[in-house]
Amino acid sequence: MNRPWTLASSVAGAVVVALDGTVLTVAQPSLQRELSASFAEVQWTSTAYLVAVASLLVFAGRLGDRHGQRRVFGLGMLGFGAASAGIGLAPGVGWVIGLRAAQGVFGALLQPATLGMLRAAYPPDRLASPLAVRTAAIGLAAAAGPLVGGALVTGLGWRAVFFVNVVPALAFGLPALLRPERRPVPARTPLDLPGAVLLAVTLAGLVYAVTARPVSGAGLALSGVTAAVLVRHERRTASPLLPPEVIGSRAVGAALGILVAVSASLFGTLFVATYVLQRHLGLDPFHSALRSLPLAVLMVVAASLCPALLRRCGARAATAGATAVLALGVLVLSGATGTPALGCGFALLGAGFGTVMVAATQVIVRRAEVAVAGVAGGLQQTALNVGPAVGVAGATALLSAGTGPALLTLAALTALALPATRALPTRARRAPSAAATPPVPHTPEAPIRAAAPPRP
Image (cartoon, rainbow, N blue to C red):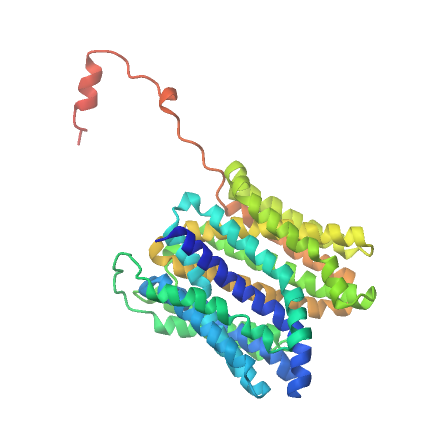
């Protein structure tokens, strides 16, 4: 597999998805005015995508393991681009909502494949660097999204933000389908369709429940019931959707939990910070984005430095330190009003989250065999979709008590992830060199012992 092309494709897929989410937020007010949509309909342009993508990520990862990550990535990119073009031509908000759901389906196909392709192309001990490049690119997309979206909406209208996805979808989707993928033929184990349906209903119910206003109790109840049935089914089926070698790993489970906690805390904090910047401090969206720019800058820097940090300290120490930095950033923002304090708080958020993203993702993907790398990537992407939904829902409920208490609670949520870091691997010890190996005594019996077969 061509490593430079694989890395470029992985980055392109991650950036397209990240940009799409950020520019949509900027485009929604203009979309609402032009299509005469209600606030609830506009909210569904986000919810439909989130429900579709979160419910299908793991099953899409399994499809990549079975049929080839490159092929599934290509289908996902081309479908994502086609759905984006359809949204740009949509005559009404109903079409936008339906096509956003379709966009979520194709987004679910391509996102796990971006990690599965990296796992197949790079040996485990060299995964940290491509993951760092991918994370840094996501940070740049997060920073550029509001600016690009604002410029496009102002100059060309809200439809232009969706047409942006078409060119990269064609540029990377078509080669992925046309270039043959050399890989060993996988064992034709049956797909766990009942497990896929149960997991989809569980995740869709959870995401819908926490994104609804108010939070849907029926959605949470449905999610809980189907989760219990899923656990029972996965323990009994011969070919589970969630392989035991992936979810049975203590380190992988801890890394997934950490990603859910820190992404919930980060996005919940950003939601609250928006109210602080725009309502309490009276800043417009552009100047609010400038105040939060240190987050994206430090996220890029931290992701770039994380491979060296992992080599020196190991995943456990790096993740624990970065989680503490993220919690400190939330604490700083809870009492910040001036520009220096706000910049410091956002910088700490970016440094902490960028490091955790690379370190925890490396634990999840590196410990998975190539044959189940798509499932591992799907679980990582699921954590990063469920976490923000839970964080924003929690922040919305906490705002009634004030922005300060809300941010203190989110800082406590981040701190709760610290004990889980103890399950992550430490820095690998180097094997002793040949010079450090004790010499074999030069006795007549030594060669005989070395050559003699072991005793039964």
